[in-house]
Image 1 (tube, rainbow, N blue to C red):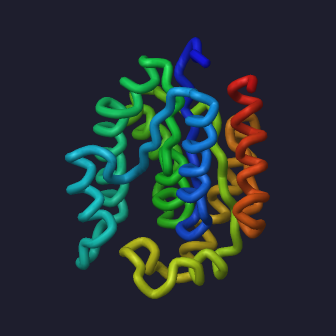
Image 2: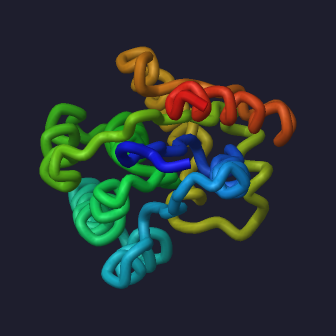
Length: 207
């Protein structure tokens, strides 16, 4: 089945919500339907992004909030130009694990950076490219942290208060853009969650 245009789908949620597992299941489902797609992620999907990811997730000294935001935005700008935009121009379905809403939830709502400024900078970093559909996998912060185990990166290691702010941020974003952002209860089983994912993606693609 050939698509007449590219589609951009982003998966969002707190670390430990299961979004990466769902993204990979979606790729398998689309492949079975012979729909051309790619899976990508942030941060770190490009060569430059790999270096930025190492700093963002494993740098062991203090990082200024604004510096953290700019590093994510730099990764995003490279990602859009090098991966996302070319795939969309080839009429592919792009499934992306994290995008603009992550910066809003983590650096905006949780870190306290100015939301309007982040929105402005995101538009520059993305060249105006926005998702057709964003799925937020909502889960209680305590459960998400338990799922991560003991080996955590710099952001995963933040306290429970930080992660609750991230969750609240995602829910506020969904309330503000209900047409684009859909929330799924990630406390359910993998199979139950994926049924909802297939329904949302099927509606977007008119399957």
